[in-house]
Amino acid sequence: MTPNPPRRPNPHEATVWLRPAQWLTLEGGGATAFRLASGSGGWVERLGNEVLVSHKSDAALEELLDGLAAWGSETGWVPARIFTRFLPLRNAERVPPVLHRGDPTLPLTSVVLEAGVRYGIDMAAGYSHGLFLDQRLNRARLRALKPRRVLNTFAYTCSFSVVAALAGAETVSIDLSRKSLDRGRRNFRLNGLDETGHRFLADDALEVLPRLAGADERFDAIILDPPTFSRGANGRRWQVEEHFEDLLNAALEVAAPEGSILLSTNCKALDPVVLERRARACAKAKRRAASFLQLGLPEDFPQGHGAATIWMRVR
Image (cartoon, rainbow, N blue to C red; front, side, top):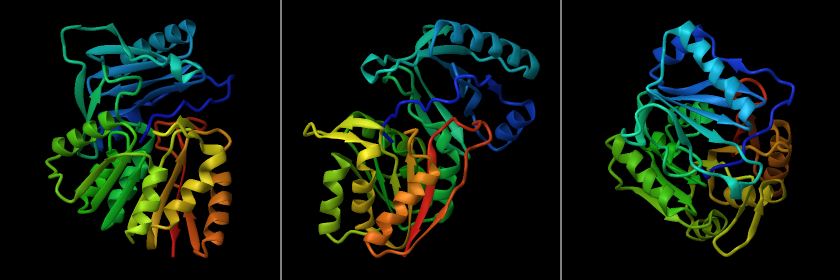
């Protein structure tokens, strides 16, 4: 999935830290990557033995670091290294995380676990480290669906493709960034997956979808997690609030009967209620019956944080 701008919670919201009982539950479930704290000034993520503190100001960074120290005293867990990342208002100002504390000679790459699945993390690869933690429940659902064929648009590092492949699916992963897809291939190898039967297309999803429809390809599950703003390979401007229906209509052309489509966005204007209303209109226009399911957010994401997501099943 292509990186998106962060959603903006209530500016008066206090920072919420993961409770020790929640920590133990996540650890017991085999996860080594999850949110430790979320607030109006930023958030804290555990990534294996390391921590990434994402902040909107110097004051917020100081508060989050103080909170991390207090949280570590309570739980007894101390990260090997702490990275920090500034959250700018404009995408052009994004920079990779920087090391705040810890051994600078250690590699900037690592591996985290989620339900036994291995994902590569790279602090030097750019603004985003490689795994969107708020999609944990949706990855689990996709794997449980055991689809035969999966289309993963805006695939980023292909985490959805990995869990689908582990469930026996053939996958098609599309992303404008060839480097992101190369990281996706590495995630396949981390999990012992042969790339045979899987395609990685460095292309514009809105251009690929009609080609797939023209080739009469159909998919049992489709992942739609586009960026809020972007420009395609041909310079075409994309804004999810304006072009969401274009994307979903194109996806409906390749959705198999009884197929499932994940709709996901970080755009504040498209909450699950709005997503469902727009999706119902698209399904009606395409003469497809549809039902909807909201899974909500993982327990380490307070309300107002993380992507808005909803599953759509079409007949």
